[in-house]
Length: 423
Image (cartoon, rainbow, N blue to C red; front, side, top):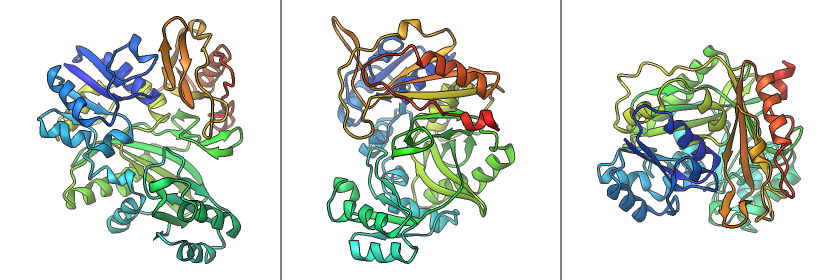
């Protein structure tokens, strides 16, 4: 089977790498790919949201399975167009994908489905939003309704922070169209957990749980990013907790979407908060998490192509459960100085030829330049991952390998998964 992975990040690199291991894949394409994916699959220079040309390519190459990576592909309607041509696609249609592309849509769906989540309000005018925040002493989270590349979430702990966050979105329009409408919700306290599940539109199979780290700096300091690293499995993510989260969060969301006429075929990601009052849903994403995919996929023992193909066709009935290695995985992002704000690109990347065996290197913000080799082209440049007998061993392997990666301004969080080692 010929497979097309849509996207250009480390998540898509990990998906292509995993697909290459499948017994039923014959060739893997990735559109547009990056500087590292070309050595594994065949890069196709078509942007992830170029619906017309992606469909044209898939038809010409007789693609048997399309896998949507980034939210931009879902929001553009790539899944709708592929399915209209009879091409099996792992990734939701645009309407179902609003569970990520519109925070207001997602919160309304959670309310109607009885999914436990933070109390919230939806606003397009600053005074009303500020009044709601003031009533909670400013301890709120302000979210841009639309897609904002992982940056449209501002955590506030007092009234002044809340005022600045609300004004930034609704008055100063710092987040563009994504922030014309905002969701303001109560600030929840606890431990975060990422749980992804594969859905055929009717039922769901849980992937291994993971914990990611969204702040740019060590000790959860600095601005929120798209994710600086992750590990799997977290010690507090018991099988019972995963089953509970599947039952009260993911399955009701899929059922509610189906009831509204939106069949969800693909990965549904639930960002959870483990509070003293129980599991609460922070957000849903309509795709694999990044960097969670880079530590979860290496632990998957079941053939992923078979599972994704069955889900894309709308019937997971023949697959009872997914099999996992009992080993642990850690993934750490190497980023450009200044990320997630402004940063420079075009720096040569050295040291990749000296990465020890057993450490995986998934590219994100890289490109190949003739005569220079690999250079940086984004904020998150690489994700290094390892699988080992324990979280501590995997973490040690990754951090040792990262020490060999060099480019001006390179930085990473050295404390990824440290909590699990201490535990």
